[in-house]
Each structure stands twice: as C-alpha cells, then as structure tokens.
Length: 553
Image (tube, rainbow, N blue to C red; front, side, top):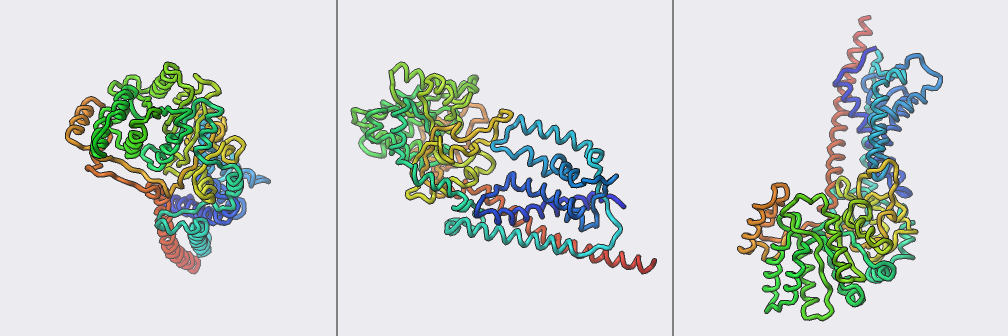
C-alpha cells in the first residue's frame, strides 16, 4: 500500500470538496420549502457529514475512490464510527471551519479558542484516531466517475430549479447571473403572520415612540442609498413631528456649520438654480471625515428642507453633529464627540424631543457608539430604529439570508414599521454586523434595536453620487485647499463623477455576492465535468495496465 502523491491528494481534495458543494445544492433544494439552508456554515456542515458517512460506510471518500485509496485502521477498534466522527468534526478542514463559524455573528474569542483546540488535536491526528489513508493494489473501475457525474448534474439541476421556484416571477427583473435561491414564502410564514397583524404606518410608529421616549435614533442604510431619504423627509415634515419634535440631528455635517445652514435657509433666492448653487457652495464648507461628501441624497434632502423651512415660522431644525476633521488626533473618539455635540445642544437649548440620524453601528446602543453615549446620558429615554438594509458581512447579503425580505414583500405597500420585542424578527440572531467581541453572548435584533422600519424592497433601492454644480470653479478651489490639508487615506476619489450624477441600482450593488457565487458555480461545474472526462481516460489506462500486468503474471 502506498501513500497518495501530492497531485493525487489535490485531485482527491477537489473531488470531495466539489462533490460536497453539489450535494449541498441538492440538500438545500430538498429543505427549501420548509427551511432555507444558508451556504455558510451549511456547506461546511454538509462537507463534514460527507466525510463521516463516506468513511463510516465505505472506508473511503469519492475522491479517494478515483485512485483506489481509502482509510487503513491501526488496531481496528470496535466502534470505529465514533473515532471517525470525532476525527472529521475536530480535525478535518470543513469540520474546523464549521465549528469556528456556526455562530451568527461569529464570536471572535470563542472561534479563536475552538480553532486553537482543533489545531492542537490536528498535530496528533494519527495517534489519536489511528486512521491513515493508503492506496490499494486493486483494479480501477469507472463507478466513482459515474457517481461523481450524477452528483454534479443533480446539484446543478437542484440549484437551477431552486432559483426558479423561490424567486417566483422576480427573476424577470434580474439577469440569471444575479439570481440565487431565496427562502420560500412558506419558510417565512411566521414573519408574514406577524406582519399581517402588527405592522404600522411608518410615521404613526415613530410618533408613537415619541409618546414613550424623548429621543429616537434612526439607523441609516448605506450612506448613498436614495429612497431612505424620501421616507425621512416624509417623516420630518409630518405636521405632528413639526409641532412636537422639530429637531433633527445628523451624523453628516459639522456642528460648526449649523448657523451657516440657518442663514442659507433664511435667504431668499430668485430661482431654483441659485438655491442649488448656494447649497453646493455651502456643502463644500460643511465637510467632516472625508475630502468631499458626494452623496446625492444629502444634497436633495437639504434642498427640500430649504423649501419646506423657508419663510416658515415653525421650522424643522437640522442640527449637524460631527466636526471638520482636519486635525485627526481625536478621530478615535468620533462617536463620543458627536454624542457630546448632540447632548450639549439638547441640554443647552432645553430640547424635550429629538430625532437623530446615524449610519450603521453609530446608531447601536452598545459600548463605544454614538447611540450608547446618548442612552447613557438619557437612560430609558432613547429608542433606536433600524431601516431595512443588507448585512455588512461579505457581499452585502440580505439580512437573515432574505427571510425578512420575502416576508415583507408579501405586504402591500412594502412600507411599514413594527417593534422588535415580541416579534419573530426581534428573536433572530443579530447578523447585521458579522462579528461579536464577546465569548458567548448571543445577540438578537431586539437586544440591539427598539424597532424596525421597512421601506422599499432591496430591488427598489438605489445609490447615487454627485449633485448639481458640485464642480463649479469656486468649489474646485475649496476642494483643492482641503485636499492639501488631509492625509492621503481619506482623499476619496471624487473625480470618478466627471461632473455627472452616478446612479447604481440596488440589484447591481446588493447582488455582487450572488453574481460571484454564480460565476464560481458555473466555473466549478465546468471543471468538474472536465475532471470526469480526464479521470475516465486515466482509469481506462490504469485498467489496461493492471490487466496486462495480471496477464504477464
């Protein structure tokens, strides 16, 4: 009996990994009606189970069968399957990855501890489990090729059907390359049932929060997303908000520019062109972290608020909360500085109510974030509300693998709000942020947010950069002056605009991971089919050689 050489070992690894991938596609399709099986860590689990079943039932994997190899057991124990089970869970590549990533979000300290234990066991793998892999001197056959071919074909068909079935008619709005299996309506039924009975009008919900809390934080989506600011404008110009709250603190903009914006709002302009030119000029001076804030929604929102507030006695005050970060020595304290600007304004001006718009983690009430400092200063008086978005994990994937989106899309219109507490949404693991710095704390959405606003599906959302008159000659001068003062790493490449507004659809941005996974699947399918052909030729030659040797003997 011989060991597999390096090339053979690589082929074995590829066959077993790809077979597990296509088996996962089939298993995911089988479960899809009742449960959506996420690719990670689902794939690692399927791959691990594949090893356990292959070794326990056949003493070899499909990849090893190509080379007539398999496990050899030293001092064969009575309960070999237990050794195989522990060996593959604790020391195999997919088993280790499954153990370190099965939590959502991934708990970094816990994952590192598991990884260290598994790597330690890996060093003594042979002694601990008494199992090695060797080649046997037997005649090769074609059965492994046909089994592998069947697994690949079944996996491809299962994925294709899964896409067609779970996307309903939505695939017509996307290219096939941008479509992936989604949860079924049946698998999201508990969310659908909750929404049918508990969803509220967005403005009614937020104003209801102000009956219980003094200060409400909105967790903004990705900064450039446009439709969210239609919702925000509709909220802050609601007569109930204007009369009882009337103050909006924003992450974007320097607190030092508040008076300049008030002057802009109070200035009459002869036409819309002058409004936009003066607003563009004002924004050149109202920068914070980056060289230039190019987001169209911010320009549009301030412009609409100009028209809403101008000549109005009872105005909605827009209060910027950041600072102009030319001196970046305190940038690590940015969240506490923004919170201090908000708190000092609330207290000095005696503001009873306020709305704050913060992006992503800045709205969290956990330590180190702006929301945390506000909640600590006003205990029991701060609520924070999430606006539907995508996770910040790899690929900007849908939250809860799309379960929430599928449920929300059953409602009409797709515009509503609800409390997390007591809902299936609130009980879900918090996957908006991919990592957790604690050992075993399991965060849920109701631990992180008071409630949620669902406004427009992902397919209806879009991102936009640039605004009118951004590159007027006097504005270019201001940009160049600021550029000389800032470090290189924050000089965002604003010149990509080329004087035009750049719009990107939600499909283009949010389906990036889907497109990459489809390209990977297509490439893996082609490579697997080529490998089947190559291995058939290889086995045919090995059989001829084996038979000729036997005849000589």
